[in-house]
Length: 222
Image (spheres, one colour):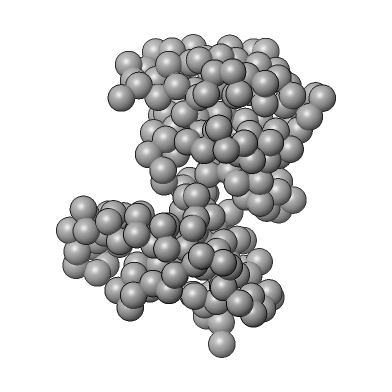
């Protein structure tokens, strides 16, 4: 399957570098490249990409607002957003997650990391650096759970709760399978069912929902 990618990056040399890297991949098609958040929203509506590489700081509209608008459109329900930034700051992290982003990747890493990140997000997985995952968990330590579960949410089974606890601390499907002595396919099936039960778009939103609903407790919390 070819992954259609839209690049939203205001620096021309960086944008060209991303495009050259991705054009060289046999299963990735760069559908478009734009330089502002407003152009990203327009291009996403027109091109219907699988993944949007979204810079945070852009003219006309920042990447967080652009992400919110792209993912708020029901016609783009299958589109995922991967945030790219040089700034690993809480406001950006939580702003991006609240907007519905599926991943948060710092610029300056190895090119292979970006390619792998696109495949991860396109497959419906979440992508967060360990430090971001840690801060996401810490943010929920000080917040009481919701008094009531969101409408339409169904309680997970005991086994699904075990899986959910591992998802919530950043484990991949392979790591979940190993920890619970399951086959990789069974672990993936459990995660898919939990996503449906908790009405979460992807693993990032699943973690947020799980903590807000009090379904899992932050590590080392009493």
